[in-house]
Length: 591
Image 1 (spheres, one colour):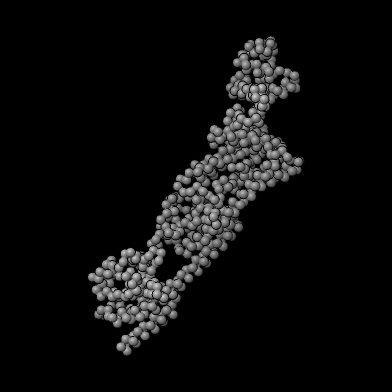
Image 2: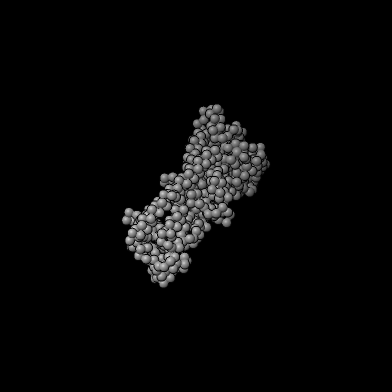
């Protein structure tokens, strides 16, 4: 009896010495296994700890003389599966299997895996709560005795405290590494956001820091920016399903899906930060996983900064445009100041160009179309600013309504130059919209040239009317220029009094002005000519004039109208303008 007591005291001392000699988790387990093996005269031992999240017991590394992570990871038993380890864990009662291969309480595949001949298992309990079990396998000489079980049961509480302490230290050390890594990433990303703001810059920097591909996608899983991203890994709805946390599978094997961290601040959700989970450097480290989750907040703040910048610029430049086009300018100096704030350095002439994106709403991946942090119209604005600076030499572009307004320096002597610039703006803007959201379109409308800032209000109205025609005809392959619309701006661009009056003035104004200045009758002559179905003799009889007199007047009419009013588009334009003039007589409302 005295010898057994001495053995127990020695066991307690040796286990206590191991606990105080090392803080490394795996080293502590290895030392405890060696101590247990010596004390109980067994070949080896192993610890299984309870994972509450998955409701299973997991073998800890090292165990049973094995350090292979794959083998260790394979030894996990759910509480539903049962078996010896689960029974000991739930009952808090130790168990001896003296003939392991034939013991029905033991799970045969694990007996075979570790070549167990005999097994002794005790519960690991701390303050009445079981945290796992400890197995001792293969007694070297003889079989397990009750004395062995008493000794194992005696040292089990100390083993439990030792394992728990080592595990807590491991978690604390891991949390410290995660915190240090997160602080490093946030510091570097914050510096990048200050020196080179923008989601693209942050994406590139994060990719360099973690050494793998990074992509930012919106809530509908549409790419916003990427760097070193695998070409064969396209965004898919499956990215969002089947993982418990940041792309990791339940069995801790890294999936082929990327790791995802939500980009959100409060109630604002901007999408996902995706990091490729496997590359040449190996699987994504848990420390990097946590650090990237923290880094996602920097991306969210950058999205909020971009949105705030867009909203401020929209408000300020919108007020400038309203002032410029309201007709309330007090002088040339005020006009120059406002134009400068709008980004224009020219004194005129200008054309007003409106660019209106039409975003495709259906998400090809089936994700949400909502983007609470930053909309697509705002996202491509910085790129359009740079495009205007490249094409025009100045960034004379502003957010306007549902799109953008550009002050295009005009070349009245060669309108084709203006049209070519507007076409280039549309083509490249279209590409930006399609890249941002595949299938989206953009339309461009161009006013006629104006030479003074006080005329910009009329130019904006012309661009708006051309835009309505572009919408009605769904024209996206070219800009619609106001001068080229002819009758279509009345037929398709709106039929309000102002539009009708402007159309009539442009179609017949030259004749009316000539009649007023020269006391002539060209406009009545044209009306009679139209009513006579463009038959000169019939028109002369209606007017009670000689055919030669009519011929002289028609020659003047052709000169002022720029063509024969009885032919082509000009015929339709003249007839429509005369009909709109008749509305004044019929309704009393100015045409």
